[in-house]
Image (cartoon, rainbow, N blue to C red; front, side, top):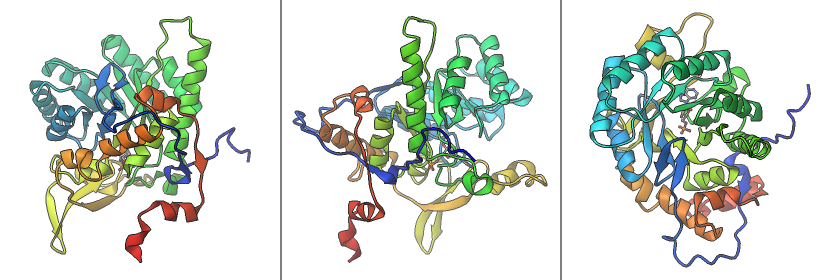
Length: 360
Ligand code: IMP
């Protein structure tokens, strides 16, 4: 066995960012605007294409707040087209997810025919660094040459290089890091999301440098996907090189997620499940095929109120990001991406980081 070159797997909890002298006077100064493919987002947040996270209500509200929601594909094309049209009618970015293969080609054709405007399509498979992705992107580009593409998921330098070759506009980076994911346990495959982001950003940097005179080459935007729990994880993702983050669990407990409220011990909860979970397979195909396994779990997470409160409330993600940017004297997402110092920490340091006073 040879250790994978130059990657030391670091997770969000393994690092902290040292503060620097800051000339920023107010936390409202930093600008969180970012670019994901053709989309300009006022805040770098994208909601996952999962059936307990993003349908039209989430996409519209997140759009209104400055991010974008990706409409999941675990429904009939007719239903997905309706969801997309509702988002289009609300004047928000429309980004449906599709899979790979013949039926998903038909899904895209149907969506393109039925929905007034589609801003980008997200090709959504477990392993984006694959021949299936290559064939699907090739087909989409031939059929709809001007349609922007987000593709994923990938986790490595070579995965990113592959995506440059395919000419996609944005990539979802992270394998096995999702809060409802058991890919790493079932298969041994994965890389901590933060390390994946750093590795893909390194690939972007390198190929941008060597191709600076080639205006036709696209360098896909990097979306950190899987494992975001706190606002600090967003700051760390962007310092690692991400242009935006994708969240499932963080948004699943809000009013805007599609799942029903369920009371467990009289406490309101919402269902949240991995799209490769046995429960999804059961709903869609009557169960798992023999010899295959589920790579996701089903859980119930506490109901947390409105999406607005998650992003702008007391422990809000936007506030955390802006405050982090002001500690680090960075006024834009680009400046934050260029911040280059971090320290690795010990389990004792991590313990100190949390508000441990409440546990005494
Ligand atoms: P979270 O934000 O940590 O909850 O992770 C959400 C991400 O997990 C999604 O955006 C997907 O990339 C990924 N994901 C969704 N369903 C599954 C699954 O069943 N298995 C593995 N990963 C999943």
